[in-house]
Length: 318
View 1 (cartoon, helix red, strand yellow):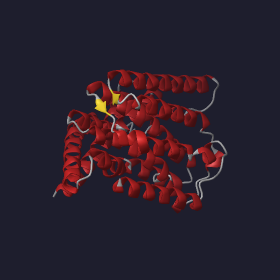
View 2: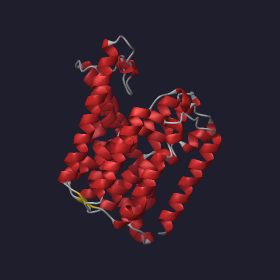
View 3: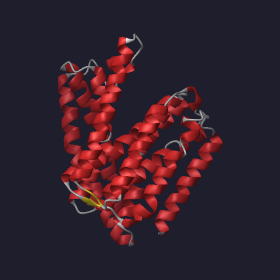
């Protein structure tokens, strides 16, 4: 029964997060907020709402291992699994796209997060530092987009139909329904998943941290996996790689940043010994595809997926 409740919580979370994004995006567009701003803020926050609610609930319930494990495990899974599985299905021509700037920012965010973790706790100070970093990144993205626009270059986010979840014809009542479903469903789903995950950990004699790094992390990475598989099949390597890089930055800076302001989270020593370094190593594995402009071939897909399986096996036996 507890596994069914965990699965139900995850499904509610994913559906509620999607509903909230659709409702918030279309509300913003209907009241005149530029599509560019919607893309840089509402969509980014909305698609990470499930992870955010899980981390907040876990922190408040005294399960920091689930909160931090969710983010650290998701970032590792995003590189090894979310890029590995699509690469098995189709070669991703990452050499044709330049994501170097975003990649350097993601690496800097990872190093900042690890440095703060060695303080032993993510409290309001760490939260403000992480959110300040996020603010700088959003401001820089906005400035770059405006520069492209002034130079007469195309900015896809200028077109409302290019924004995730946008439907210019959506009725007001439907927007309201989506927002209500999202706001009601997210806390319910998060509560179900965190409580079930904690009970599973107790039943099997493993720590909250292990459950956060595996079950919860993989579950909340499913939307990124679906998006990346679709992008790989459509030969949109820039979308696939950009999705992973952006998600990893947002997980570290926004999710833990906000959760740290709500409740302090003690850092399990196992993070400092092993998991944070695996997350950093996984991030460095992107160097051939981002800096050396190599394609993500099926061979790389096998390597990345096998590395993730090995990581999970080690975590479960620690």
